[in-house]
Length: 132
Image (cartoon, rainbow, N blue to C red; front, side):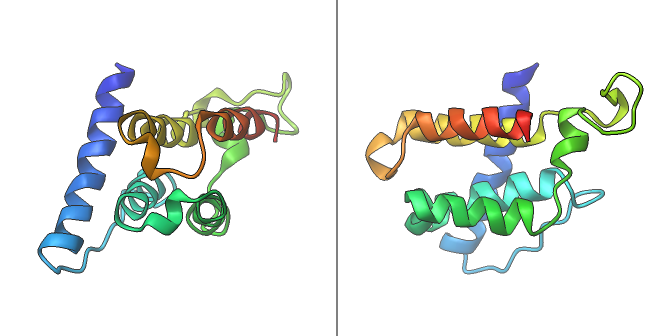
């Protein structure tokens, strides 16, 4: 279920962070189409590696850099698409960004003093991603 997805993303990001921080390795991350898991893994690993991305401004920069500028399909993944009869397109629907936010929340719960923001920012972003 959902927590298995959270576990897989967290495990992958942790492996990336370990390779970069502890083994001094470069890591190339590219998942099937590059839209979904790539952004989840790179964003979360950057959050783990660099405290700047755990600040309010840094987290917004991270989302802009890894999600918005990279071309994440927010409207498609939320299922809300103009020009479709009922306004919903289920075949592209997938809570990719929401899964990332849940992974961030898991980190925030475990290490609250490592973050400059709290779950209110994550809830705001979750809501904003849905109403676009």
